[in-house]
Length: 317
Figure 1 (cartoon, rainbow, N blue to C red):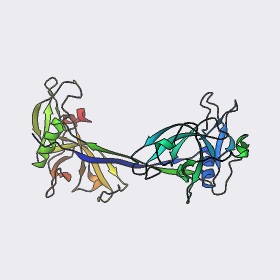
Figure 2 (cartoon, rainbow, N blue to C red):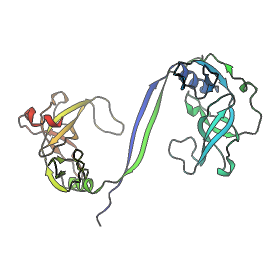
Figure 3 (cartoon, rainbow, N blue to C red):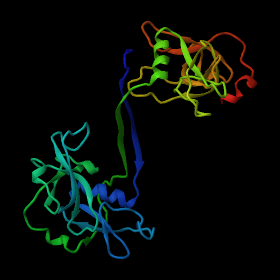
Figure 4 (spheres, helix red, strand yellow):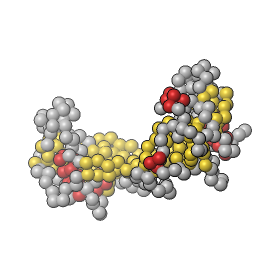
């Protein structure tokens, strides 16, 4: 049997967002060991707070302080914590209705095992040692058998004003997964190992798709006929990259383009080099440049041929 290909992949980017007055007050409050909610017109207290009533859609800014103790409303045990989760030992994900709140807050509960967790158990906030104005300022919840905080029965109004308020956050988003190509893409990758590019032709519309997916995206029928394309191609459209990517050793600015290889009916992605970035243009004829031991072209460079006529690639834009 042929080798089953697989590779660990990660999609990662920093998500940057500004905060409105309610979220700013909530996160800044956590930094100061204060938990804030927001009161709706009908008197409910929402924690975490939102800026608009989920029932009426009215804007709400009536901030109140709730307790740091609460009750578990539901939970699930996490046997194998993942990178970036609140605790590095097994823990429970819990929804906690803090004293004085009418909704529950999702966070981690540090408990010795699932037998120690139950719906209705009392817990309290364990604050992080170093706090910056983020949900992680609550390190986790921990079991608690003491009395409820006196002030939490009637949440006290709060101005939401703090010195040096948090006005924006950067939340890293990351997805780790293992990719296993199917028959068509395995053949495509195997051909790249021999410095060849192979697509598959649709038996209905006769278009050649690269990389192949095993089915025609237009007709929805299975594809099996392999067709070698390229190696030369045409730049159909492109962008100039001015921000250096993490772990990518390429100096900016550089050009990333859609390149329609000769014989293909779908443009693929590739970096264009060997030419000043401001001279790259639609219709530029290019060819692949391979590096020793590489399984795919490092970049594409101009061939020196005349530019392709627009009508030859306009359907691939």
